[in-house]
Image (cartoon, rainbow over all chains, first blue to last red; front, side, top):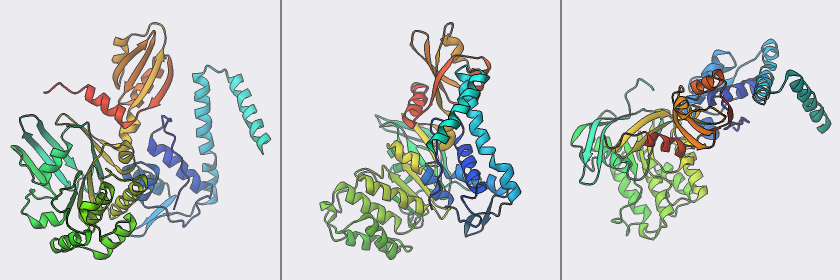
Length: 130
Length: 301
């Protein structure tokens, strides 16, 4: 099974973190439904060109959060995620993306007003595309 | 790394010829993982394999493979491992693939004929052709099929992709990845191909001039090494060199500096804290990391 996770080589964020954030978002957004069998650790490692150590860490973290469950000998599945959990987590990925956008602005010496303006323009552009 | 017994252990291993000195090498290859040995030509990768296979004897130190001493006349150990050399011997060129397979079958009680046939189909190898008539890539694919057919616990591969076309190469990576599914098997692979190491390895061993420079978890290695570019008045090479995690500083001309970090998180925090004028940053490829590591190597210690 192919999992739509994109690695950004240029990002300063550690690989395991990038994978974990995206996999969590896929589960919490319902794109990966509860009961879905995930690829084996080795398979996903090959797909994402990372080590099994990284994938194991991601699976373990998400299992500890209650988003995944592992059945001995069968594999790793998406767990039942309650509505409430979905809601609290829904904005997390967006929040992280905002943080990195603000950070990029800070490096370019943007004022808060400029950032505000850029944000509005970005929203306008995306609405225009639709 | 796991606390389980390593698949391969070298402890103070040394080997010398009149032109080359290997070691002393201390190395543990963890079970259940793919470990890639990388390094320039003549760094000692192939000699290390020859030592593991008992084709040459170390003058000092001990070697353990799957808990036993390597011994070419220890059939029980040989049955649990497989080796695919970079270049194949020409002594069996008159044999057909099917004849060589029959020979393998004699030696390996765990030989799985169905698996062998499946691998031949997957790699698109015609078993009726004589080995001497095969192209380099075809021969390489046959050797891989032969090596995997008895389901070895430890697989030693020396430049496995030499001669393979891109599709065969991709099939090989998938096959090796599936072979590792079991979780208890181990691959030790020497490779020049950065992309191969990228896709296959869990751990990376960097060798140069007969020494092991380090063993790294692959993703941690790529997370840790980064390049930063700085431009600004008053920057000083000496001051930059002392930054946390800074491995090397290179003056790019004018007031521009390139800074190589081997601990990007500490370096980044420091750059931020000191408000240094960073104009760009970039991850590093394996060849750049190797080069930086080798540049720091003590000259013939």
